Image 1 (tube, rainbow, N blue to C red):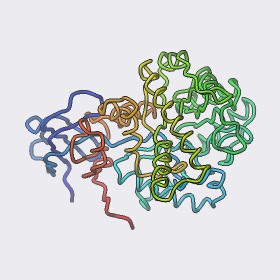
Image 2 (image 1 turned 180 degrees about the vertical axis):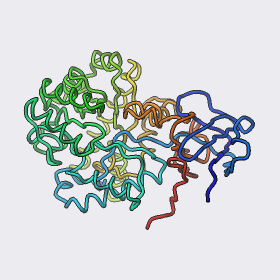
Image 3 (image 1 turned 90 degrees about the horizontal axis):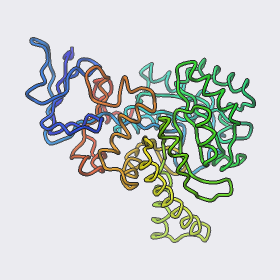
Image 4 (image 1 turned 90 degrees about the vertical axis):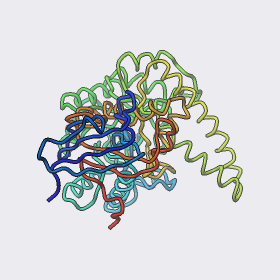
Length: 418
């Protein structure tokens, strides 16, 4: 029989709030819950209690990472969603299980899945609850809300008019959705118009209102400025991508949009790393085999777009927009199990390492409406914990040096691939 209490000790502890690093730290767990956070001298189990102690020496304890934007059924091999959706649901559910395991073993203890085909991710959750396969804490949208032919419409819901939009939300809630994902503009879906709004404002408002009525939040894919404006008008909770682009493709930063996002307390998930991953793949190919003319043009375009996105990311932060880390893997060429690349790209975009850690812990939890349970290491919250070699406040890449992952107070067996 295991101990009722665990005490984890390490050279330092980052609680996820952005506050000072706790030196010579200790944290007391009781079952799945954090009971005390402090130093080796101050943290102790109740007298007479059975206690398991783990001393991590010169390592760092911090909250389990939260990836606020994943697509669990993605493969990350560059195929478009238009091809992905042609795979059988059974294959996609197995792929979702593989991706979930990879993310958990890499230190991500919560994911927000922003759209999957049919009921695939709900079936994954059933398997996790049965103990068939491990996974991070799953926050699922199920099928995204799309217009006819719109971005991700092939995943299962296409709605027209406020009444159908409300009905779509009700159906998703019935199926078990934890939040609602809206494609407020087009995107990579071939039948969509990438830089133009999809839903009208009255339709978006119906979706957001219906979601809020059920006590859940709504997050909107916005690949253009007008998409952001419409989503804000509708009462959105999180904007995804948040790209300052006009319908003609011009990149024009619009400070009034950022001011409104900041003023209304809406979160923004910028998804910066997907482009970086693709750029690095093309650069590697250029060095090894050379690029085709088409790839050479693509690389130049992507590098220019990436620099613009980083500039706009910095300006939005300066305007007071709260950025939350979400990788958008395994979409495009970005496989799951590497949320750290997104976090590191936030630092490239101007965040201090501590700010980037907050973006993937406390602020990501706030965006996901789960900050009462996870996101920071404090008394009463669930014991989702990451232990790493090194000090990620000094060197953000140290988040890759996984020593242990705890989910609900239990150490994850990262060697179990059966």
